[in-house]
Amino acid sequence: MPLRLQTAGESHGPRLTAILEGIPAGLRIDPAFVASEMSRRQHGYGRGGRMKIEADAASFEGGVRGGVTLGSPIAIGVVNRDFANWESVMGPLSVDPAAAAQKRLTRPRPGHADLAGGMKYGARDLRDVLERASARESAARVAAGAVCKLLLRECGIEVRSGVLSLGGVESGAARSFASLERVREDSPLRAVDAALEPKMVAAIDAAKKDGETLGGSILVGARGVPAGLGSFAAWDRKLDGRIGQALLSVPAVKAVELGSAIEASRGPGSRAHDEIEKGPDGILRRRTNRAGGLEAGVTNGEEVIAVATMKPISTLAKGLDSVDLETGEPARSAYERSDVTAVSACGVICEAMLAFVLADALLELTGGDRMEDVTARLAAHRERVGRYPR
Ligand SMILES: Cc1cc2nc3c(=O)[nH]c(=O)nc-3n(C[C@H](O)[C@H](O)[C@H](O)COP(=O)(O)O)c2cc1C
Image 1 (cartoon, rainbow, N blue to C red):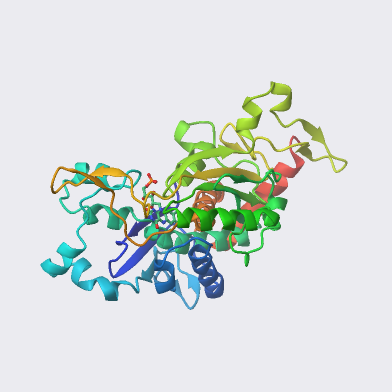
Image 2 (spheres, rainbow, N blue to C red; image 1 turned 45 degrees about the vertical axis):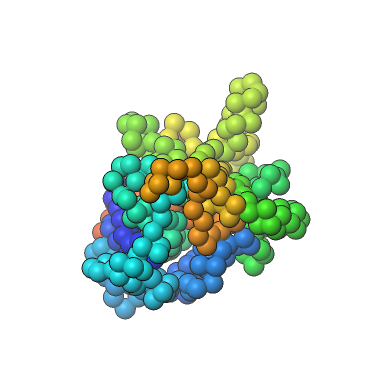
């Protein structure tokens, strides 16, 4: 795959780093756009105190000169402001044992990485596990995703998301890009159905009062995606699988649905598939988009549409039954400052991951060391697909 993304950094460590390799030379970086993506990830009603401390800024530290990519790996840093409060606990080379002991975590939270990660790495202090498992890491992904979105924008492809359901308040909005265009970025929850936001906000308030947390689902989609990205020729090139993997890698995302797959599975085939017709312009198109723009792991020229489902946050103020690893005795799970819900922010991370997968598949199709090669080859591809089968 032409694009590679790696991130490093702990939640309360000094900084997060993303390295994005494979972006061609000649892509202009729009710093205001990158900054707005970083801030979108921080918003959403129901977030905890951490997001009030951080004001995420992505600093470009490699692979870019004068605002234009060089073709070399792009390094992006995001400083954790909170490190100033945690240096004695999270110092990379030394910690203050007394301060570290105070922040020691020994009562694993069901649903978080604590127990499984402790068993895996042998950590006695589960902070060694949770610091990396924390969704704070996703700030680095969103920074890299913003670069992917800029590349896609040059290619006429746009990626958006919106909250479809939260805490059981469900929208029946159409699974289409048009639904995503109606999402108000300045609303408390970026819901697809703005009329449902007061109900969602009330559900969050009630959950908070009860020491509870909430999950939900996100509609994420892309428009302008050419037919022919991905391949059925080998299982690991199938784009549906790659999108699924990328979205499931987002913390707390536990299910991914492409198009209207679940509803389609409940009815007959005649109501599951997207019938083909020839438009007056001679172009082949679909009457519906139940497949979410993907057939056999290949984009078919329709909008790419997915739904990512997020479980409720696993750090509950009221705790859950657990065991204190220190004493071996039953105990309530640990609580530290946490979100009541983060579905809206999760959507921004899903956008970043979808943008990464689409940019990767696009570069696979076009190749090219320079953006001008990418756009010229994409234009030729779009033209060929448009007149298919001629
Ligand atoms: C934007 C965002 C914010 C999150 N905030 C929290 C949080 O404050 N507390 C928490 O326990 N989990 C939070 N999570 C979820 C955990 O990171 C996640 O459940 C944990 O890493 C275990 O991974 P898994 O749920 O993917 O299995 C958040 C997830 C996202 C996407």
